[in-house]
Image (cartoon, rainbow, N blue to C red; front, side, top):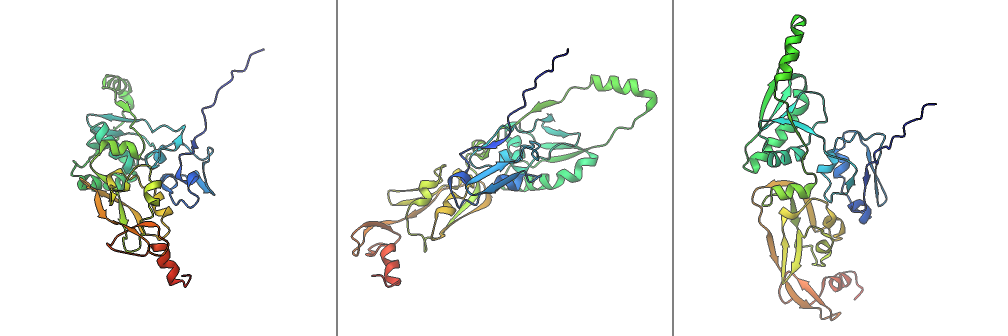
Length: 294
């Protein structure tokens, strides 16, 4: 009797506990779901899941997750030759975020596509070149590969010619927004907008930021956008809604510094921070006075 061979299936893709959706109940981060072409990622209360039956492991979510929370998925292996990505068959279309990494990690400067696939890749290539122009980097060239004519009488010659051709190189790029930050350390991909008129300097945004893109101390409120990965946790925890995060590419991003003052409330006698000098009432007591509680 023949024995059946036991096959060990690869582990299913998961979203681990680093995910901001699992740490903040009001999180609005949906980067992975937005990048998924088959809607395999779903959210529930403080949870995020990948449907293994739908997921075909294109790897798009790896390049959009701000905290590298996705496991058991590898970036798609692509072929390249002489600074050109080579797309000669129908494969998962790369996102702009993935191609930005190819640009730096492998010094890719163009893409060679078989003619039937050009229309599928053109939007991604156009979006990539817009970002490269902003970053003052060389834009990618497009090389369209015409399908070879098949002569049944010369099949052996064509086969021999294919054997003589130099094989294409294969590779995978580093994933995650933090990897992209390593390749572009002086550039930013998000804009952090602060409304100092409504901000009460509670410090919640700085405490929740894993990347130290927001720092409060020594009478300075610092927004360092080149550290930001767009998780929007700061936006979620800000109850006065004084901070907003938007996708925005910028070359040589410099930190924005706001200055604040130390103060002491004459009503509750507690210390607090103020945007203006000589303020005598803290934001909490000011709000209570407006509501008639004091």
